[in-house]
Image 1: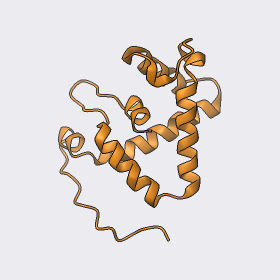
Image 2: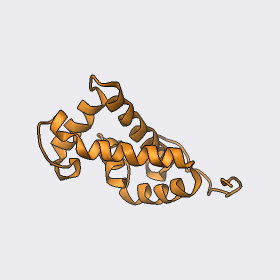
Image 3: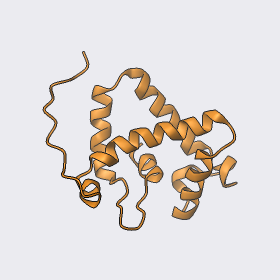
Image 4: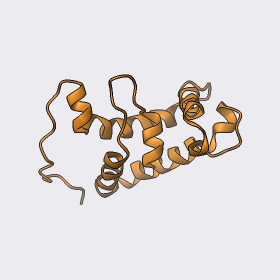
Amino acid sequence: MARCLQAVLPSTGDLPGLDLESARGFLVRFRNESPLRMQLTLALTVLLFLSTPLLTVRRPLPALWLNAARLDQHADRLSRHRFYLLRQGMKMLKTVGGLAWGADPDVRAALGLSPYAPDPGTWRKD
């Protein structure tokens, strides 16, 4: 899952992309704190992302087996696909990945923002 989120939010110029270790840590917290429906939706959208390169880049391979250029092309084409559900799946990946990306101290420093304080753990699901 973390590698799919990283593929959706790569580095660009001076702005760092989603760090794989940060994404893994975020996903552990996400599984512990998010509703089951959101967890299932993320899992389904990851499967969608992994299984659709044939539709976007004409390669019958799982997405993570593509080279970096093709993977970027796959993510871009999937986010602009004519079928709404495919585009919506990419929005889910970008939303969850964006939560992890925006909390990364390196990203916040690149944007001129101070890092977030540690999570006080005051809210948890029942």
